Image (tube, rainbow, N blue to C red):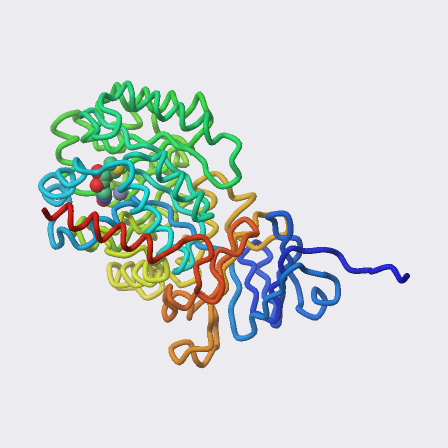
Length: 441
Ligand SMILES: CSC[C@H]1O[C@@H](n2cnc3c(O)ncnc32)[C@H](O)[C@@H]1O
Ligand SMILES: [Zn+2]
């Protein structure tokens, strides 16, 4: 019997335009990606890989662009439940008069269904990893796992009683139990997540930081989201929110700071010096009229800035393609400079910078052999993506989430030809509609 010279792969994507988005920034057209054991085995010309690999499954992706899965650096997934509930309000009024009261009615079960709905929306729009902060996060982890998504999750911690854990002592020990429970999981990681400086005392913030340090996990919080937050912080502590955190010893590369809109030049110096990870949420900042984060300046200063949608009650969707487009355009108009935030940077913020922010840049954010196989395939055979001169331009300025055709997470196909393979979407939508009826009554 003749010996086979083929190598085995679980999945082979062939005949696509493959963008590695790594340091080498290679493009293969027609290109292929060989996937096995949850990792990328090889990326290269289609003819070479088709001859080399015998794959359990092969997908012909001619006419499509293949790239790393997108990373949503900040969201509250289960807030799909509140999409469109309260619009056109500033942050503090939106939160205190509408969202916090509605959240008092949440149960673990609702958070599960709301998160599954978010996972469906994210997978169908090209997101493969999300960073979440919410209540009942054990249910968020469970839902993400059921959906086959990669997630960094953490229970929100604040000084007032939580509808989930009650007093903060329980919140801290609950976070610790989540860290233990998920420590060996390939998809789910846990972070320590104080809400913001206006809901957490200095003592709580220090305890959160110590907990994150002790377990070597990220610390995530909203920071300097509005001028109101800055004014309150100056009144209460005589320091800006960033200076307040520096004073408490919280600024370091483990901190993932969401928003960072209202920053003074000194704040930016601190963020750069301490190598804090910044997550920019342009659509939420626009919708809540919070302001414009000085992203081009932060990037110039060497700060890692990634992209998030925030919860979809302040966005109101979870489509990172729309977010990249908004991001690139917002900073052009804010600076009256069309070069202020190029398409290339917007795409990097949604991929590689997101991976770096969550401490996984060795394994995520690029199509590199040895990295985890989180890969999306975008169908360019569409009127709004024709003709094709430059794929990065189309990905940022013309494509939308609905153009994503296949999605692979940790080597597993979770969407094929737009069919969700891990989620019964009709069941999920039925559950969420029942929740909305209950909320209204
Ligand atoms: C209980 S989890 C997180 C907490 O934060 C609220 N929230 C949602 N979006 C924002 C935002 O942009 N800034 C501050 N807080 C936000 C959410 O409703 C939850 O209560
Ligand atoms: Zn948020």
